[in-house]
Length: 460
Ligand code: 5GP
Ligand code: SF4
Ligand code: MG
Image (cartoon, rainbow, N blue to C red; front, side):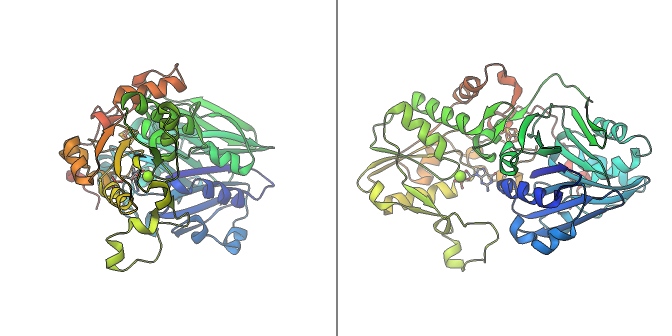
């Protein structure tokens, strides 16, 4: 999911939030929502689909206020329904509050169960509503205190934005799994999942929110509170590999530079006699350029992506759906014809897309297709906010590399080693130790306790 928060009395905060969400669209395409606070009340609008589908001029104009939070959703807990769209807005003892969450709580089901037996009722199936209930329960004290108490109860990954009628608060979980950063736009403050949203708004990047930090902004200015500390940082390495936008800088590391370094490491680990290197757009492009740099094999655009591809377009016929990759990608025949091609992608999840792309390249005349992946095999599910439902079918969890290679029909298949991935990250920032990244989906070593006996408290 993607988060944007604006504290800007006198500014068109809803419009700024809208543009911020537009820049964060890659973090979620299922629903979009914006809530604004105007001293007296919180107004909001939420809709399904892309930001541009959920909002129009009239809806934005209705959202007048001094402070705003926005959210784009990609569901990991709870189904894709409007009821589950965020921000969640509620009344508590002291007024109104809106909450937006990126991440996934690992003890949500248990907390939900405990809250339910003491009388709490729920309107959604999201883990975020657990946060809402806890905040309301602890809300008699100050909001900072309520947040700290909530942070003690909840486990897992969470970057959170909390808004009242006139205040904006931001929290990053003690492990710093999901990104969150702070910017300034004149007198206004901006908080965003990724720095690319600050750039879009013309805001200056100030800094990343620290793991375990609470930031509170109101008419008296900004206050930072180190709420909880944790011995180990566990920033999601997959944000750098796939999820974040290349023009973002997260915790001091450029996503684009990190991806190029992964591609260079791949070239050091895996030398192949080939004529061209191509990337699977968009997420594989930077690594392909890095590979080309290091290996000296020329980079070319061998695949084109339809830039208007969303996830909500009209359902194609069954016949076309079976080959839906063709709606998204096409081979550039002149670039690959008669060539020995190295095709680089950032990751293989199920292996279905990769298989179809290999076929597509062969059909376009490629003589050989070697598939290289700029991350290690994904063998374990993510419990911290990256699409777990997809991950249930992880091909590398059940098949060997040789079997996957055969399945996708490539001449050869190679993955970046875990050591190579970490070398690429250390190259970007030598001050971040290897164990300060979460890479559980590649090794099964989970930095935060994962749920057990989940079905006991099943939510859906
Ligand atoms: P596969 O060959 O496994 O079917 O697809 C691999 C592609 O899925 C890669 O291009 C990669 O960028 C993309 N991918 C990786 N992780 C995710 C994810 O969590 N969600 C979606 N929608 N795509 C992903
Ligand atoms: Fe990121 Fe993988 Fe860790 Fe999930 S398990 S937080 S995707 S590194
Ligand atoms: Mg991709």
